[in-house]
Image (cartoon, rainbow, N blue to C red; front, side):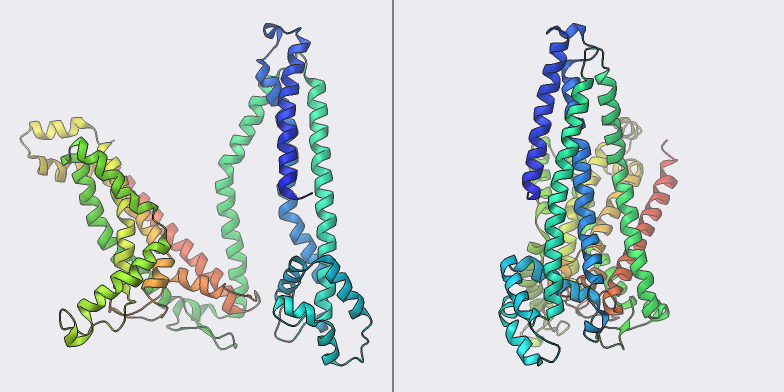
Length: 492
């Protein structure tokens, strides 16, 4: 049974369990809810939870574990001598998965029947002729061992899916039966349901922490593998980024880090003043009519997809800057500083526009949260409105404003599409904002695009870059927390 329909069946059983549990509880009390220990809805919820929770948890674990177990079992059947030179088992398994998912079982069985008749003395050209139809389907040549592994992969996947369906349905029915037997008027259904909901809340609260730990560990293990293949001194202290997948790559993160920080700094120089001034105007000077119209209009910027900002940088801002600062005597300013539309300034300006609502909206809410008594006291002492804002409101709201700027900085550091389309793809050290550069996130995407071999340093470097970016963001959070604590003491 497909996973979608299995979930539908489990949800239907859950709804049936809710109705049946509620009805059985009322019947045990001869239809008088006052004789029940708990409200009828708790009895229905108890049966529904007993049906849904064990089955759905098992389903999620099964869906995560089955592909890993099948892949390990299938990869163990591929002889090491059959794997082409300079090719890892990961790339072979990628071909196996594509073949298993893309071709019909009947085609696989028919081609395997033909390939089994091939002897070891058969010429390679004859083997390619037998597997030609499959090769056309995949767009590449299919080796016999890959074809056999694909058939095994499909067979194990089918068996696993059937077993998953049976196990989940059995667990749901067992939960249905046991919870129904316990449904009597003396059963403390409310206590059981509340404990179950409390456990779900604790699990939900733990997911963020567990997810963060899982992400860090996954990057950490691959980073350790990377440093086992590539010198850590070149990664942290080198000056060149030149991956070439030939074993003599120079993989230094410093040029990428410089591009990331440079573009982010320009973006913040655009977003922070504009966003902060907009927040001050909306919270302290604008009328309610203007505020109700301007704030939602400003926040629309946060909902625009980043690919649209990338196109805006590529088609509008880049050519405009090129017209202003490039093209020699034909340009508006008669300068020749820019040689192309992609540059650090292009990406920084557009990214800054994207970050304006992050700064303005959060800063506006924080400024409005400053007690009105502080404003009234300042004005009562003779300060002007502008002096009140500078010397009272902004210092009181500074911790929150720092948090808003930090959010904008983290968003800028992690941006990819605007950099790809607006800044170019050149990793180098340069202080010229009119030149093309690239960032860490862009290189991570580039290194993991296509059929990746997770045994080469050129691919594993993406995890080292990702972990470095995580540490950088963590450092920003620690710095912001220090600033918040330092200034909050004055107003507690």
